[in-house]
Amino acid sequence: MKDIIDIHALMADLGARARAAAAELAFAPAAAKRTALEAAAKAVLSHKARILAENATDMEYGRDKELTPAMLDRLMLNEARIEAIAAGLRAVAAQPDPVGQVMAEWDMPSGLHIRRVRTPLGVIGVIYESRPNVTADAGALCLKAGNAVILRGGSESFHSSGALHDCLVAGLAKARLPEDAIQRVPTRDRAAVSEMLTMTKYIDVIVPRGGKGLVGLVQREARVPVFAHLEGIVHIYVDKAADPAKALSVVLNAKTRRTGICGAAECLLIHKDVAKSLGADLVAALVKAGVRVHADKALARLPGTIPATAEDWGREYLDMDIAAKVVGDIDSAIEHIRTFGSGHTDAILTEDDAAAARFFERLDSAILMRNASTQFADGGEFGMGAEIGIATGKLHARGPVGAEQLTSFKYLVEGDGTLRA
Image (cartoon, rainbow, N blue to C red):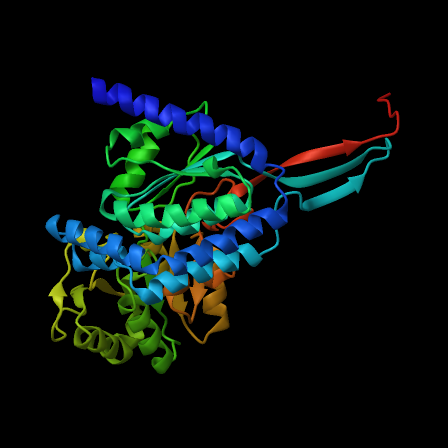
């Protein structure tokens, strides 16, 4: 009982301090937020050795927990990834400040002048799993949008996230912004997550970023509104009018570049007219690259494949696996994606404009692509500097959630002694 009471007190304290910081951040100058993020980027680079050392501790912990190679890859930091984290911080710093932006304005016959302007959400709680870079991305984006944030990273990345959080706090101090603006839950105790989900007094929105288990838990138990980031059951449909060279390079990149990210391809759908030609070449290339291809009956005869089972459709592998299926036409592909997809990212490979238009029109995933690797499903690649996640819901935020998506709006109404008749 003592631990539960302690966690409750800990989280209430974090929440109260975040709420106080959010009140100040709501009108913080854009220049101060930019200074904080630029200083944080410098701190990340100057503390590279410490971050790598802390990450080595996390990697050992992850291996002891027998994480898969793909999950260990998500957890691992190296010099290039640390430099990318710093670059992401600088990119967010350089973006226009969304707070106070006029979204629309108009005059009414009554004499009123009305403006709709962007305003911070308040306090955001971010719950995520093994990727330590989310600490920097989420902290930066929340700050840019004038929000305070409470970060609860995964147990695997506890030390790496702590080192990165220290860099963010150093940036806040440099800019003379409240250091409670970016807080991190300083415990691995899972009770902290349950507390966050019910902190309606302090937290305005929860953003879960992780696997199906985490997101499902958040959606079931949260009393606080949620920006859902569901699993990435990403499909690629290879149309009969696909360019073979493009298809080979795109499919390999989408599956193998990094298997542990939510934009990695998990299911390959192939038009029946090219199944024996381009389809066979794609499967052979995947097998050669070390991918375990879970093939339906039409493809199971191909060398190196594994017979697919019912569980392979709608599965997020996050590993060197992909499901593969032959479909009769584009509408069959669309129906398969509607049935088994997660509304995250889906792609069509085709040179037929009409086919691409049909795919875009009849599917409603957060991100739809044509002739491009699904690994581009990333806020940084969308010009947002970074992302806090890929929202798969349909209310407020959808797709990559950047600083602009972490704002709400208010109406500013001006008159001149104006009265309603």
